[in-house]
Length: 396
Image 1 (cartoon, helix red, strand yellow):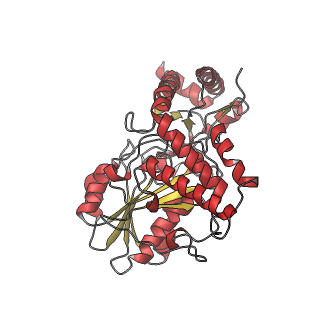
Image 2 (cartoon, rainbow, N blue to C red):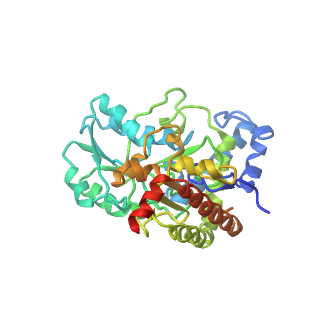
Image 3 (tube, rainbow, N blue to C red):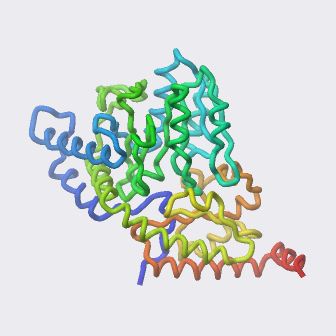
């Protein structure tokens, strides 16, 4: 029998793979040196572990190890990338292009820079969550220094056409940054073939520990330079000072290695489970998928259940299934999802949405249980709903 509640909130965080935990353990109490200590064996061992992890992360995204800057997570990486470009390239311009469906780490960083004089273009998305490439190119001006488009959306799983976006940015000699937090480790991501110049990732989204991430910074064609946001010690090639989280970095490296080895098999196993769940729930009346049906992550689906509120629905089964109505970073907000609103959903439909995120640990038995529990919960609430009764009456 499986553990309850069944965990289907893997876009918020994944379980740390036991093999990752095992690899990390010696660096807490045996090989506990500071990677910046160059005068003894403890420091050398820590530095060697960090160097190896840097190679593992670089290999996962098609980079070289010198292009990987370790951070506390994707939020810090995003802040370093966007603010670092804005400050470093201020002599060229102050215009940044991003998308209305980005994660709050990007949106809030851009809003912060707007208060400091940056000009921000917030691109809309189509009903399927994809941007219009013509609108992107039309928005570029001689003052544009950065295009910032996430690889895959954290709420809907929609994957943006990153190669085409990169081609437009390069045509106009503009840096292209991508928040790939939801994509890295789940689908193949290669900064060379996709032409990404800056890429943010976080370990806990692909079976690594929380509190560690990385920023890829392109070294040539073009060479990207950043203004540091943390000063003191000159760690990480002067871009990010601070004592390195050696156990976390080792865990990120191991998670990257496992992703390279097992990603293809994970996708083959997870995708049919996701489709089984989604297809079963779409059989419910007035239930709709949000986001492009094809261009999306294999482990994610976002559904709206008309005439219900997702928060009320979750309260009926939160001891049986763990999932969310959107981003974990905005779960305390009473506002409807900015992602779904940008895709054209009404407040009512946005409030009626749930996000399902599967993982390499999700079993078919758990999916069958989730389907049964969801169907029972939806039907129970609708049977008590006056709005649903009126809807049914309108059909007769």
